[in-house]
Length: 230
Ligand SMILES: Nc1ncnc2c1ncn2[C@@H]1O[C@H](COP(=O)(O)OP(=O)(O)OP(=O)(O)O)[C@@H](O)[C@H]1O
Image 1 (cartoon, rainbow, N blue to C red):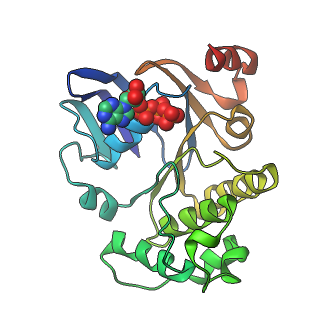
Image 2 (tube, rainbow, N blue to C red):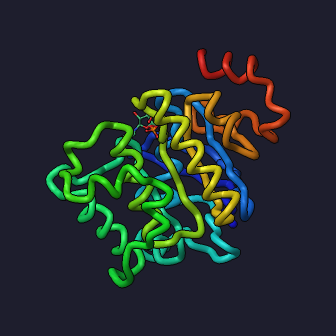
């Protein structure tokens, strides 16, 4: 579904992504692991068209999107939950969710299945986004990304700063979306246990390069943990 080949990205003269090749097959959950600052977020921003990529190609469902604007990519069905969630603190939960419709042109309505996935949000529709806990904000951010019924959901460190019970809840929802709705998902993560729990395939990035990859069921957790700790 998502095919990235020989991708490069720079901030000024500094190369951040160096010849990245990564593939997210339809119906799978793929995780990109790596320490702070290796370029994971830059990679996700490249997919969304938020960072310029002078070299390489990004294909979505076989179509070249490398030079397309962000809104085009969103309308094709790519939905992105950035690191730090980007919830609008002064808007209510309901208003934050309505903003998710913008990705598909502002039409339509919020599907009831969103509240089935995240029952806690239904009880908080009139609350300000800024009054929610970190975990609830993450759930709201994921729910907002789902409102436009994407084909590919991209999550940047969904477990960051979140308590274990909510991490479990988020893991459950991600697996449910994948199994029941056949949603394809790409996740950037540093929390190895979560990656092992939810993903089919993993990639590890170091200094803008993919250094190892494989099927999660064959992962050597000790080796990956060492790489993450260096
Ligand atoms: N807007 C920017 N301008 C210049 N350099 C940047 C910018 N954003 C990130 N960088 C640098 O690019 C490198 C990669 O950053 P990036 O955020 O992609 O890493 P990351 O792996 O996602 O890390 P983290 O887990 O901390 O988010 C880092 O050295 C960072 O300092």
